[in-house]
Image 1 (spheres, one colour):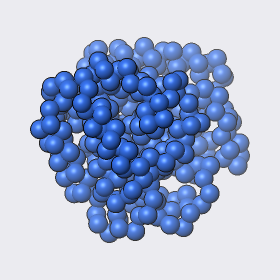
Image 2 (tube, rainbow, N blue to C red):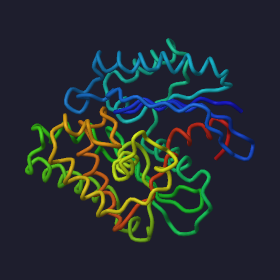
Image 3 (cartoon, rainbow, N blue to C red):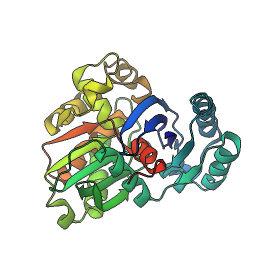
Length: 307
């Protein structure tokens, strides 16, 4: 079955077109990602801006052409934190359905977590030990604890790279006080939302989405980006801390020149490194495995009836 999954997130808009077999084997045909900043100022203003909607719609128009070109049998467009939080989010959802013929769904935090876990665990050998999947987005961070291919505890917490950057970072490069306040705010949100009894049994972690993949690419100085070298990469907490110190000492203009970092992620990558390090500390993880498989893969598998 050929399916198309679109992830319309707070920071980026992504497309996956894939053929999926009855056994759940996924063959990726097309993968695209564009930083569209749909959630720009949603935390402060409470609504999606006209400019952000236009940026996202321009990308969706191109994705619709690719979906038609590849003759996909089914599609799903998932909308996450920014649209959930915005007063005009439902109107944007209807526009996507009507203008681009996409089956647009605003996910609850729980649904987002379930699809993320489904995607992250696909293609992996089952494990009886609890594992946490960490998905740092633009507006929120999802944590899913499970074993084998079954999600257990899951939560969506209101701390993402766009939201926290807008809330705390106001100088370029960021001031030490701003970084400290961002870290304290993040730590508080994570520890309040992650019960100790859910954290304690976890011995390993998988980190998905843009912050984690960017960290793996920067650490390896990948130019151009190479998904094969990012997927499965072991990212140490000590490395994340070193990357944070290095990136926070730069202006945004300098960060745009860093090997392995897409220039469009330069404004939010410092917050991303803080979020990732605090997530790892919350579960006392010395390292995480970076995965290219995330909510996009989970949405594609769900379209094909794979659970």
